[in-house]
Image (cartoon, rainbow, N blue to C red; front, side):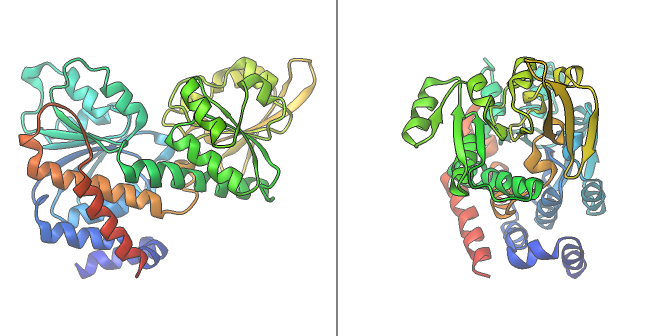
Length: 384
């Protein structure tokens, strides 16, 4: 273990020293023993924070096979670090199938991709050892609920208190504020923003932008969420009307092409667009590219597009990370919320290793005992 501890301190010393949650998680899993020798298929963003989680899971004895969610969020250094720990990493569109070919016993998913691949296989060809799974995203849970015969118990981590209230609400919102400060070099006070989507993520983004003095308008197709946003104190206008005065547009819907040709043409000069939803296609980059002349590459994975507005006037629009989830691509904001979420995901795997075979098929809310254990470890790490 001394060698592994040295690797941790060399890679991410500030995380491990200031918030040693994963160190505590690794020791917990090792003592618990539930993951010893268990083969886990994990469809995830391959980041430095994933690397820390892999170290804890490996310390607990798990055998890991990881597939890539999005090349834009993949950190090559993290991938190498994961491989150095003995885990297997598969990249590209076929990576979920390659993980399934390793016959894992448990699956944990981001976007209901690897579980869907498993369910799409003929029953006779499905890896027999798989007994249970978990899913972490809103869009993944929406897809899961459309499956008529969910021939597997799947824990819904996304609807748990910790994922919804800490990682989705505070983690993403804080990351957006951090990114905009770095991108603009100015105070966010008075900044006119649109938040598209008022779920756990969007409501957190709106809260954190207003907390910094921003003027926030909320757009959502669901009248229930619009009404809640109104009583939370936000302006609730339609998207096209709001775009004419917005300095920043943040999408958080999990839906494709929320921003398209008409929206690009209606946006004001200098507007910044970024997505924090799961799918990069929330911003229709093809339509923006077709409307634009020159395109400039800037810092922080941001591009400036030169185009004409609907009245033929020249303007510039800025897009962060080509529409990919900007907070993940750039790892902005405090890391504590994401690490708490990842620890909860790991503890769900521990729970499934013990109880997965006895759970009925279908969706299960994350067990409260899992969130309690994750919270205890996090509170201990915060007091360190």
